[in-house]
Image (tube, rainbow over all chains, first blue to last red; front, side, top):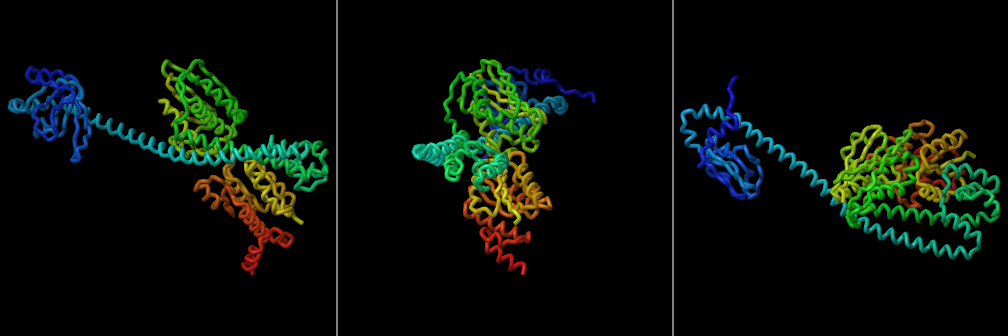
Length: 442
Length: 160
């Protein structure tokens, strides 16, 4: 087919060259109204026009946008209805040229002319369709984001309420057990050096012996000290050297209870500490209450986090490559919490997979506007079936451990980072999982 | 007389000692053992079995690193030597599907939620020990201090 339609330029020269057939619109002015007569085909030279339809309830829905070089009134002009299907409003000061239907219709060669116009008109319609498609997917994305944000907000409020209640209860338990421990301290001090010593050792260390060590030691204790099996087990738990135990031979049945009271307070202290940490992290989910400072040194927050989770890090090799002089506006506590979440996730996935040579890598880098923090591990990677939802609450690969497997670590982190207008993304493959946090320089 | 063992498995040492000291109320007729991991428990159970003694009740936490309680109890169920060991899941956090697996795969006998009630818990363990003795055909009369009378009567009735 050697048929070739007119180019845009040819159409403009051929049909839109009459000086009088031009129109200027101020921003906000209406070009044509839905359901009203329109017998002109417009060509937008400058500006921008939005076409929308209104429903009976009076809600307006954007249908398409017209940019310079595009036509307006295509439907009413070519369908022969001469009635506009949409209302068109100039959203910028605009200039248009137009072609009137009547003189065009009365030409002798109208039909073949239309054929020449067709390619340009079709490409114009296609552009409209594409823009509608684009708008639809943007809208869908916005709705998804909105739902996600709403879910997080609801959960956050719920969590904050819960945390508040729990916080009160935990605080009472903690302060009362601290008080009781102090009182007992005085009390036992007056019961003689031995009693106080046993109590104090229990309080200081708690049970440091593993269940396996206790099993190993108790036989020896039972034989060497001539105590029954149960007492031997209780003595083995104290971890006190046999020589110390021997010094108190004959009195051990009496003294062991003081060690146990001390150890019980030790455990209560740990447990209430643990509880208030959990409560604290749940509270952070709901409230952006932490104080923000500008000029916060990113590397310092990372080093703080690494210090706090030293015990976990002992099992992996840690490499750092920190570029100095990166500052953002944030609450130090919140950022530390985010890093701890990411670092612990990385460590635990490596440790739990029982791999050889686990390596945790932390890198910072920056441009004039953005700081990038990368937490990289060489662990097994995040399973495909959950990688898409790791930032949702209640998704966890963990079977316990330090973060209690609540599945809240990443949603909390995401909340915090988004609050700072930053972002978190993840790339995960077996052997390399990378969390990338971007924060604005401030 | 043969030795009966109760094995408690929990990765948190404080919980482990709490459970086992509560079980000390059962007296010196049963041996209460603590293990911090399923691996350690397996070693101990093999040893008990090798000595010709009985692992009567295994009480395990669910959420533990490396291997969950349900996985561990399932393994135990699949081993013909230990299929009849009484299995208790003691847990603070288990999903719906964990619970289903606990029943279907691990064939647990009791599911106890943390925090637990000490007296109820002791009663559960007494009942399980009694069932174990009866099912194994061991001389339950030697354990009258800790057995559950109602369980014995029910067993007698069911088995003519």
